[in-house]
Length: 152
Image (tube, rainbow, N blue to C red; front, side):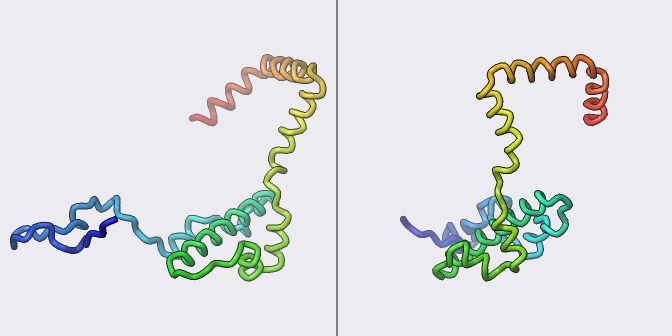
């Protein structure tokens, strides 16, 4: 692979001193983000209201922090530590306990229960659909009014 100097002029004449970097569109050039910009995009886990949202926000924050740590290590040529060591060094005991308790599959447990019932009793799925259809027919006007209100 050949390296090209982006700051060198493309032509030798004195009137056209355009470089390779001058020809590249400004919106395509990657820009570095400052720590303030990075942290402003992220939701702090303390601000979340529900316990599940707190766990999810803390988990996302730890994933982002570890990814940034790996990028910085690659940039500086340092051998990174594994994620467990990084979390024990970077987070408090409370946060470490919360990260240990994080289980993303709990979000889907209600769906899993429904699928288990549907597999064990084939009539459950049919009866559930019949109940949902009857409920919709009975409350159709209210449901459609709520939908229209949300979209407007």
